[in-house]
Amino acid sequence: MNVSFTMAGGLAERVDQIFVTLDHWAVAHTPGPLQWLVQILLIVVPILAVFPGLFALTTVLERKGLGRIQNRYGPNRVGPYGLLQPVADGLKALTKEDLVPRTADGVVHYLAPLVIVVTAFLVYAVLPVGRNMTAVHLNAGLLFFFAIGSATELAVFMAGWSSRNKYSLLGAMRAIAQMISYEVPLILSTIAVIMIAGTLAPEKIVLAQASYTGIFPHWYVFTPWGFAGFLLFMTAAAAETNRSPFDLPEGESEIIAGYIVEYSGFKFALFFLAEYLEIFAVSGLGITLFLGGWSAPLSFLAVIPSWIWFFAKLMVMICTFIWVRGTLPRLRMDQLMNFAWKFMLPMALVDMVCAGVWRFLPGGALWSVLRWVICTVIVVVPYVALARGLQMGKKVEQRVYRYAEEG
Image 1 (cartoon, one colour):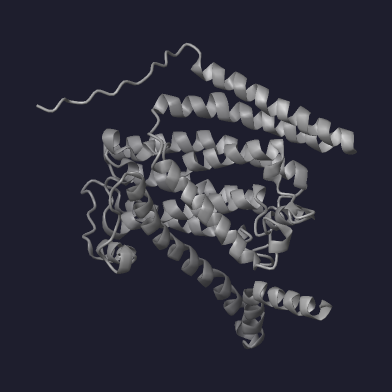
Image 2: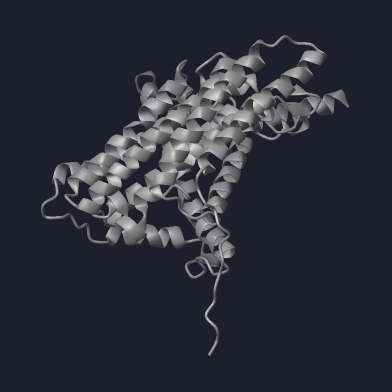
């Protein structure tokens, strides 16, 4: 029996590390002067292949999911069950005419979609998508992620300003105001994790959550400060990536299509690709910080390869984004900004205090119970107070639906 368990464990280990083993084998069988080039290609090519492929899959999943939510058909004509719709969309984007306004700044207008796509790909360098599967190991990986991610705001402004269109410029300024406002609580919500884990390296944060008590994991989301931080992080991430209900920069009813209104063809497709790459990246970071990264949800499921768990969690996050998009209406601009500065920011600061209390309260059975009670109160009381503060002075009436009578 022990021999069979050992063999099963060895097989699971080999499957889990199959990509790492292949990487080492390819580098070892490459001539010395070319090993650095092969090493770089083995890092870059999988990222350039996997996540754009996931983008194509997500577009079909989202359109079919929204169709189901809204009681209509999704893509069902191109290929079996409409699965080849991304191919048709890609061919259309490649062959569609590229129109540039006569008064536009041609160079900046051309560079904007390239800058936003490059920055979207760079952040994947520090995401651990499996055990020993981080492209670049940095002790300050979180700082790298947020520093590179902030370049997105520059690309958005480049697109809006260079188009020489008032709607484009208004959309760009909206987007920048929104991204800066929600970037503050996004970053602050990660500080609680940094305080508890004691590191800025994403792979070490995952390892800090990879242990178990019985069959249950030590994920940070299963603590009062971690649960609050996770909700704050993902809400800010939705606003940072212009997802519903925070998609005001692309509000068709007000500013046509925002900062991308003067883009067509493949340039528009690059903006579309970058938006989804950013969604995958922030979702992957949320998984890394709060959901144990590549670790299994139960100890006996650890035999399943770690990279499968990471992408399974990522698909759950993507489905949640789709569900929210099909459910919630778009906010107004004043609601968007008030929510960021009057609720999200104070709650992020409260969550930091809660994490500090959790960290420095003494151990022991009694103190463990008291720690849960104290930290829950620290989170819940400000939440209720801030929520009531946002509603103060506003008359919220019950909505009445009226239908035209049949004549």
